[in-house]
Image (cartoon, rainbow, N blue to C red; front, side):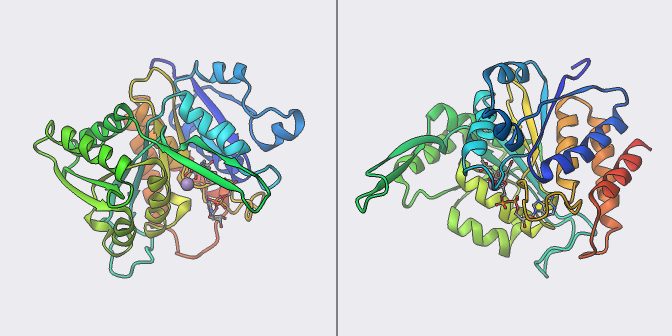
Length: 345
Ligand code: NAD
Ligand code: IPM
Ligand code: MN
C-alpha cells in the first residue's frame, strides 16, 4: 500500500475513547497519514434509524483497513448493532481469519500465580464468517408456552479448510510450530467431523507442524491451568469468541487484548479492533485501557506493510506495561499520550 486508506469506525461507549488513543499512536508513527471517520453506532441509529447503510458499506470497501473501537449500547436492543454493523462488516468483507494473539507481557500480572511473563505466547485463529454466527435458525410460537427457538451452526468445507490452512501457515512461521484444533467432536458430530477431516487433510500439507486436538471444555480448563502449552489454536466462531476472553483474562485482562479480522486475499479491507466491547459500566469516564486498541493499531500497521512502525508501537506498549503498578488506576488519554510519544521516538 503506497498511501494507506484507513477508515475509522469508533462506534459506541469506550470505543470512541480508545480509538482516539490508537489514532494518536498511528499519527505519531505515520505522520501526515489521513483516516476517514465513519459515524456509525448507537448515536446514528437513534438519530436516523440507520445501522450500516449500503452506501457506507460501499465506501468502507474502498479502504485498505478499518480501525474499529466497539459496537453495542444498552439503549439499543441486543444484536441490532452487533449483527447489523460489526458482524455485517466481518461477513461482507469476508474476514474469515479472526486473529487474536495472547502474550503475557513483562510487568503484567496474570491471575495465575505460577505463570511468569514471557511464558504465554499464543494466537487464536478464530473462524470469522460461519458457525453459529451465520444467523441460521428461527423461532416459532413466540411468547407462548410452546415457544421454540433454534440457532444453527453453518460450517462449509471451503470455510473450515481455508481458516485451518491459515492457522497452519502461521504455525509454520512461528518457533514452536504447533497447531491445536479445538472443537467438540464428541457431541457436535456433524460439524465436528467436518472440522476433523479438514484438519487431517490440511495437516498432510504441513509435515513440519505438530498438531493436537482438544475438546473445547478441556481447552477452557487448560487455558487457565496451562496456557503455556499453546502456540496456534484454531477453532470455530463461537468457541473462539469465548476462549479469547479467557485468554485475555489470563494475560492481564481484556483491556490488553487486540484482534485483527483479516481478509487474507486483500480483496476487501481487513479490520482491526480490541477484543473488548463498549464497556457501558466505565464509558465516558476516561478510565478505559487503550492498550488493546493500540495493539490492534500495531496489527493494522503490520498488515499495511509498516512492520517497523508496528514494532515501535508494540515496544511502546511493552515499556508502558513494564512501568505500571498492577491495580493502579489509569487515565485513557494520558496512556495514549505516553504511547504516542514513545512510539514516535
Ligand atoms: P465489555 O468487553 O464491553 O466489558 C466487559 C468488562 O470489561 C466490563 O466490566 C468493562 O468495563 C471491562 N472492560 C472492557 N474493556 C475495557 C478496557 N479497555 N479497559 C478497562 N476495562 C475494560 O463486554 P460486555 O459488557 O459484555 O458488552 C458490552 C457491550 O459491548 C455489548 O453491547 C456487547 O454486545 C458489546 N461488545 C462489542 C464488542 C465489539 O465491538 N467487538 C465486543 C464485545 C462486546
Ligand atoms: C467480539 C464480540 C463480538 C463477537 C460481538 C459483539 C458480535 O464479542 O468481537 O468478541 O461475538 O464476535
Ligand atoms: Mn467476544
